[in-house]
Length: 132
Image (tube, rainbow, N blue to C red):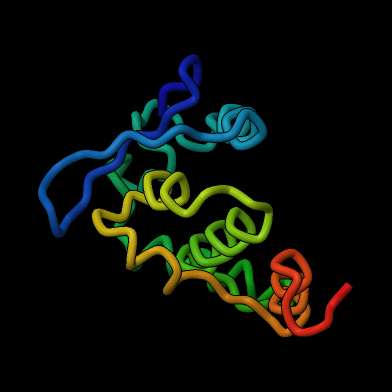
């Protein structure tokens, strides 16, 4: 995590390359304030040995937090929620694709979850079906 630039670097296991993503100022501040938990590790979420936490270990921690909060929690749910919120708020599909790190734009809409109310809002904006 580069706190000054507001970017997060991670490696894509499938592609064997690193990606750098911009992080919101609020998340940057939150991660910076939680940095003391990582000790001297360069990783935002280090494992007990200070090295990069495995995907399974992170999933287990999120699951435990979710159980205590009474909700289902996972990193993938955060991803789906972020993509859905971005699209609902009018962020262009191609911009969301880039933010999500999808190589093909067709992948991005598969992450979005629109309920009936959101569908109705879209129909209003498009002036479809007698909506005013």
